[in-house]
Figure 1 (cartoon, rainbow, N blue to C red):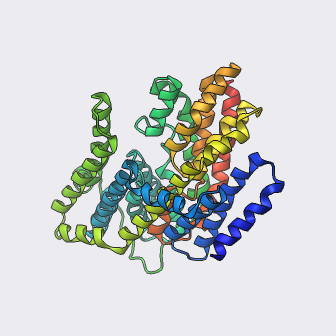
Figure 2 (cartoon, helix red, strand yellow):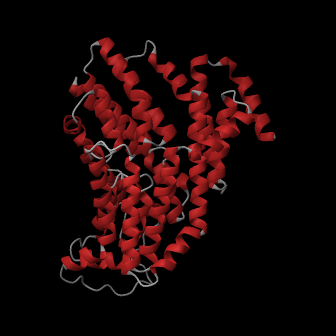
Figure 3 (cartoon, rainbow, N blue to C red):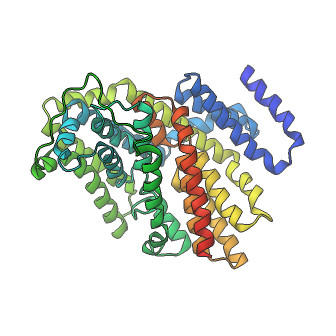
Length: 441
């Protein structure tokens, strides 16, 4: 009750601000509440629900309306698919790790990629080719396996896994956000990717500079690590055999998504992803003794149940955002007489940061940006590219990004420490987007 009274008192003190600025301040305050609670070891799912409660009350929602929004959100189609996908990912990751197959994958590629820095980045970016929500939990065991004999802090492992998992965000044609952006702009995907492809190169450069270079990632062997053995010759058959579950998951999901799109089947692409992950789990169970028991442990263990609670919190927060009309009211702040360049960058940045989802910033802001571009006679392509870069910067800096949440939970690290180290490279992505925008104009 004290929490609710404090929020209501805060609302009364906001009258001195211009009305158009109040929605943005409300969203920022809800973020601050979540981060403070997490910093003091409050359960993450509970912290997100507290942030959504603060957001709802600040936007004038009643407690029953807030409760209905939070409780109804997990049972919509997208959250249900997300829960299924993350559950399958966690089951596959648990199966590969506990059966020792993750270690065998590491050993099989040790002769192919000898540099441990490159191995960590490689596995995170490889899983990034699979456009699945929460895919960072898939690559996390592989990243940890690549550093198993090295003295690398959990914070560093989390940063490497999270950042390199998302380097394809602007340059891979199967990401739903890219597909939607091209459709809204009336462009072939190849035309959009020809302009956003530099974002991939920039992401790789920023990741290498901030998270991989020797000055920030000294790779000293652990004192208790066994003596290193030189990697043997590359065995492609061993790589194919041990990596078969990963190959089935990645190429199966990508292939089924392409089939669903080309044939225009009336089924969601997430269903193909679920089928590919289920098949990959079946392969892992067959390949490993006791695979069925490990699968049961994954689906009934505390980490899985805890993650379900986090997912409920995240989608509850997003539903409160929608019900309160927060995005639309923030858009009013920039959509009036503000310059188009300001709007095309700020709106995707804000929505990406608030939601942590590419489809959210593309779907909610690009129609407005493209309409303003048409009214002002500005090149819509330049605006779309700026929006993509800015939204990407926002989701990478979002404390609600499901991959950041999953990564930090997996490595057992404080999300606020990891989040702070993401801010500068995310700002540089935004700055690069503006430079690129003016060059395109």
